[in-house]
Image (cartoon, rainbow, N blue to C red; front, top):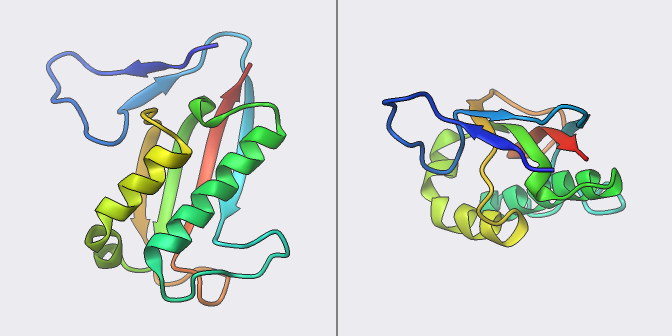
Length: 134
């Protein structure tokens, strides 16, 4: 099963995301709840370290997708909630390295949303996802 990236004619190509992603007929949709930088015992890791929290939250998203029988290539959409957009922008190199390690060169449709706070005390980032599984 292959997801199809949708690019409107004449639009500049996006960098690091897709404008749209289409799942093939018959795909199963998996909604992944917002994941923060929890370890397996639900303890927050990387307090104060945005890049580590991003990597851990993304790894948790991928783990949920794998538990449902998919892989990172099945991610259709991500919403990334951050408490500090500046922190996100300050470590894009580290975030890109984590992305390539965990997801590769697959880019789902994505949105970044800056919020006043997250439910988990000390969490700097939370990632919610939608995946289309074979």
